[in-house]
Length: 295
Image 1 (cartoon, rainbow, N blue to C red):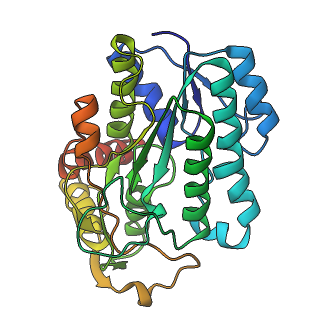
Image 2: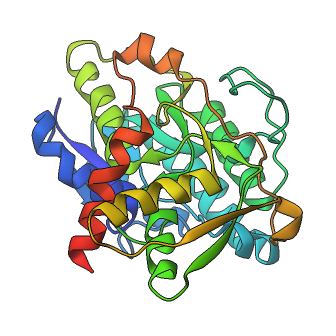
């Protein structure tokens, strides 16, 4: 399979895809703003028409969860209207589309991992706009794969792991929410999964298309326990560490509501594409070490 276009250049997932592509033998072409901007639907149509790829990976999104509450139109433009235009362009040029979505499409209730067929009920503007983007893609582009993920971190950019390490440099104790549970997901593992889809399409172009999948790190934890695991690795490497006090969501008010239960069931992706992300406790240490080495 040739001619794979990735929308996004500088985000966690785009950089992870760039790093992992050679290991999978999958050549990728990356485009971003201003050539292709989710907030500019016309630019997306023009870019897809110009490159005419066999497949497109949308690794870009509006991800400022709290800011979206005050600027819903910007979030909707990049998370719903832009992806709809990208899906239309994919259909018109015959490209297959991989679109990355989020656990925030669910309301976070219940005690079990969310399955792909569970009914979305987002509680935030970010979640609603991501759900609208999913629905738009389903409506206009049959040859799509939607992959929901959760709690993404990586050696690149801003994420929870880097934030914890930075805070620990100046604070001996931190208060971290302990009543939200999810699957920490290395963007490098997520990239491996998406590249596995692209490899599968070389042999079987229609494999898994038209469906939604969940892909996240194996194993679940709370944010406060995740923070303690980060500091355990950091301390072993001579890096910054801090004590962690677990608090409730009510004690850490945020502009946007967060799902209490973000766990995602990943069996469908594993059965279809033969890939399951590693346990998060295995994927975390190399990321922490890389962040420390670069600081």
